[in-house]
Length: 106
Image (cartoon, rainbow, N blue to C red; front, side, top):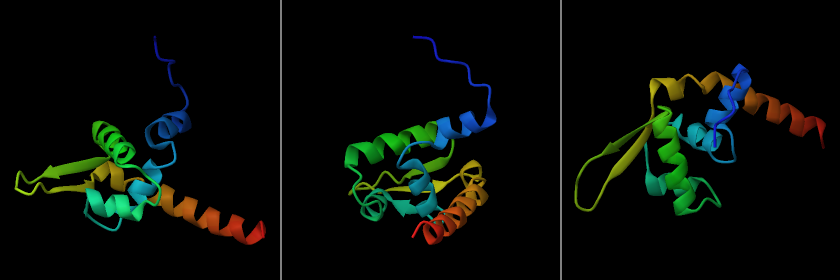
């Protein structure tokens, strides 16, 4: 099935970071490198499978860096790439808007 051509920059952004979990993953990784289980514990309600899939997609889109230490027991860490860090201002603006909305919507 051919994919629809994306012509709007906002649509491109939403295609890359849209969905329930990707923005939250980025938000947590803004604080620094995290291991898989740390991320899963910080994201209440996400399944192991969903987190794995989201991280893989984000790695493909070059938003995160996966560092596999090839140790026993396995140790893998995730951090934001420079491209992922470039989303910080967007996320901070979303945070500010959410706080204002929550105050008004009460």
